[in-house]
Length: 481
Image (cartoon, rainbow, N blue to C red; front, side, top):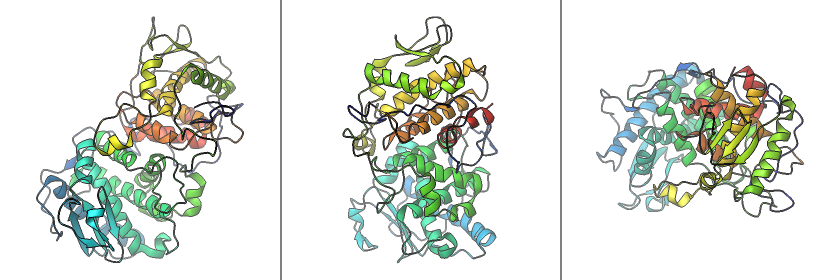
């Protein structure tokens, strides 16, 4: 982040919003459904258990070319059997047509035996899973992609990928009923497939699956984390061929399906995507491609932007100070803490600077842990503690069940204000994905209360941030108490 007149970087600036105070709207119309109250996930209870194949899951009766008896193939094949069962129920009930099974399934190792499919070689399809319409085939890389997803995110990541590819097979079957033609943009197809995946996981979370069980906390966290992992690169346009969407956009589509079902997914079209998609090229003046150094100058601009954004609340916002990240006489949530007695946000700039390092995509795809989440992740952490001071000033509780969700919602409202035309600082491509990545971390403060107690499940954390981003600050108090 920096001033537009100098470096014009990640948040190239913030518009001086007159009324982003708590309880005051600052955004346009929302395409988001109603957010959930603390303690449920789209009306389902928050559950905690190990997600994956059921102990009594039957052996799928499927013919899969080149399959092995390895764990990744077992999960993948069960996923195909399971999602087939889901659509065998959904298509007659909601689309008035019978389900036709996919004609061919292929498991491949890009470093092993080569296969020709869909006009290409599987040796060139590393780190991939795909649906091939001409052959009515679903294929997956069991050698590199599935083991990486399984190791990093757990078994539900594999189910997510296969559920998504099967969503494309369903599009092919629905045709006009899903608005799919030869000229339909890739982004529409991909957002629909993510949405169909969400509707399938809702069915699973309701206990209807023969093969899998998924918790609404850790299990759905695996799903959201895997969608973040397979996001598009920052700077890609939603109009480009092959665009799938940012993590922010992909989780939106998944949650839409989870909350509202497959019929809503089939209604996704170019117009609805244009109204809310965040995937965009870098600003012409963004020479650093969204990566700024977290220094005292940037913290000063952050202070100014937050003060302007929340001045409508009618209270004195806290001052950001770099004094170690803890409160001498109060709650401490380093590397950033809100100190009520002094109305300050105490930060550990050195630690936050590590968090602000760019995401290392090469390390991600090698399965290595990375410390950097990007500059916006660090700034959102600080902003979350700033909003504690705003909430305290207007008399909101900082430690009730909704405080964490209200906090992330207000951070989202702050981010949404940053996209106004004429801003000195503005969100750059990839910033919202950095916030999502940080939100899904167990140590994140973005959706945490004064004491750092985090909302139990990632589904609610991500949705509350999105509610604030799309609708402004009014829903932050209306929906999260």
